[in-house]
Image (cartoon, rainbow, N blue to C red; front, side, top):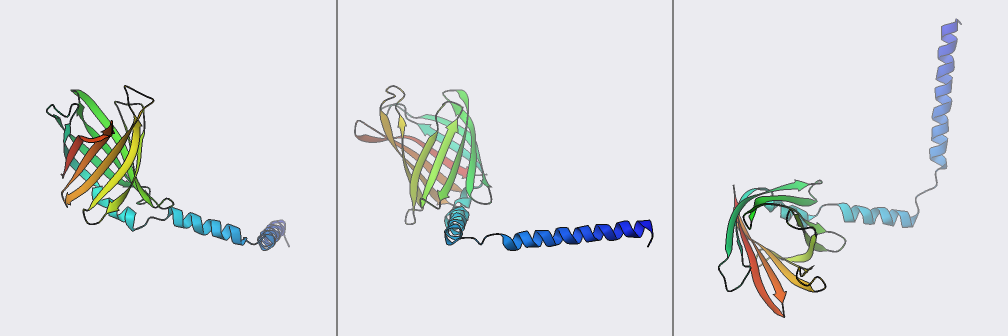
Length: 202
């Protein structure tokens, strides 16, 4: 046996020992407990996209928008136009939306997420934009008869920060190429529509 053959055989022997050691460790690993198995099953159920997530894919795409905002219910609405782009993200788990337009004559951008929480069994809507420092979150349900989602949340009154304003948000599909968004606020016990947006698929 020459020097190089001896080195090669030594290396093979070392690899064999290492492999055997790994197999021994794997064999010695404790079995997964019933509780751990249940946790893994619960995690899989919570994280796997469902039919509700597939349903939200309707909103993916590019849209043109027409917005009406009522600062005073007795005054004409302020009307603006914009664009909205929505994408399916994180393996079909959420719809991510970016809006670009104007508000009060100033450039305005906003971003939101639309999704379904498997654990809570509810749809949710989030929003953040360039004219606020807060974060919107509302929970809701889908109504098949009207082909719409209704969300409920609340926000602090800017003039009275200690007072919370209840909000109802409705997203309704009109047809394959258009949907609507309505925003209602309850103040002094009276609900009033303060914004509506019409979306047309590009």
